[in-house]
Amino acid sequence: MKHLATIPSAEGLRLTYLWPEQPDRPEGSLFEIEVSRICMGICFGEDSCFAVLLAERLLAFDRRSERERRQGGGETPHYGRYFLVIDEVEDALPQELIVELIALKDTYRAITLFGPDYPTHLVDSIKQTEGLTFYRQDQLSAQLCRSIWPTFIDYDLRIGYYARPVPDKDTVHRDLEFGLGTYAKDPRTGASLQGKDGNLVPLLNLPPEFNNLKSRQGIRQGDLTKCTALWYAFNGMQKSFARPATTQMEHHHVGNRLTGY
Image 1 (cartoon, one colour):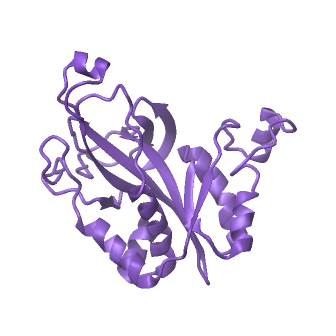
Image 2 (tube, rainbow, N blue to C red):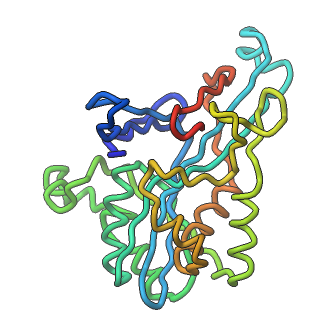
């Protein structure tokens, strides 16, 4: 699928894609998915550097009446969530990857980046990269910003870098196996969530329709650089929670006809 746009919505963000032309699908067919937020995870390996984009799907079931919703009474809404690997990028050098992060941040409106706290000079480089973590708004006009960074949207779209200790190999593979082998919960029933195809939905998803081939290969081959980048994103998302929209209504899960999610 070709990514067309990321647009703010009541649920968080709406991702719009163009399906490739196929015999059973007309040319120009669109696919949209609502996500609550998008984050990035990075890893600087010895031979390559890797970044991955992870989107959170937050599902809600609210049995309260409209009056209870307005007044804040009644039973607490039930939530479920799962995560989708929606994009990735690999570069040979750290500085090349950092430049790529600017475009990814703008393209997907990601405001959070999880990564290592070492080596220090690379962490400092990320935090000091203009166009990624800050803009000199008083010195650079929007027009000039667009000439420097073609994907520029506005001054407020900046990334926050959350540095975490570098995990050991066993921790990375254990946590990813947990995500791949654990199923998301249906907020309506509390049971494991099922896609439209009837299959259970893993907590950590890598649907092949998205640009995540290298991530899937990295998991199968035990590539520590790719797995660690995904671990940072997944671990960071898992340990935080998106604030649900106040207007979010009861969840009715309708899976995509190809991914089943």
